[in-house]
Length: 180
Image 1: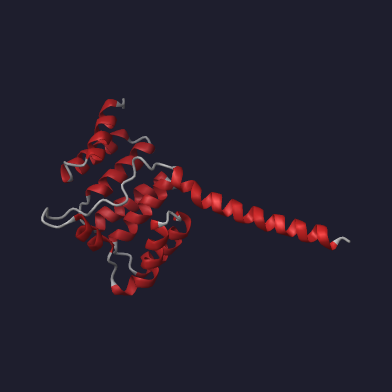
Image 2: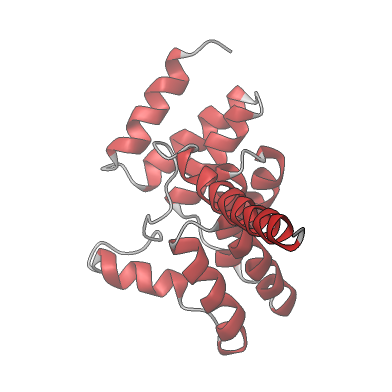
């Protein structure tokens, strides 16, 4: 007699857990989407195509293949919480890989964790080349923390590195028009 209510309660609990998990994973999709620059190519000569540049940016060293590939796959699916864990594992294996820190910065912005985003993006810029998208994302995170002057300088740098990018120009104009 009492077995059926227990089974029903158990099934409801599982259904709730699955729905909650799915909602939690999808919640990051709704944040900062208009300003984030996840797929910008690295700063490189104009003769390379966007596809070639993008592939060059995400090609990990051989020793990072398993962790980086899994993290990148989750990142592309916008499963940022899981991707963060895999990127952190990849960073432990190769703490000098600037791409990992850039991806972590984007993940932290998506999670509205701007302090960690700033740290990750600064590390990415310190380790790697001056990539416009990294300056742009760092500008966004700095602005969210209330550091308007730094955000403005970073936005200017992003526009200098990629002067044709309308998103960067729009962001710079928005920062210039907002009061300090």
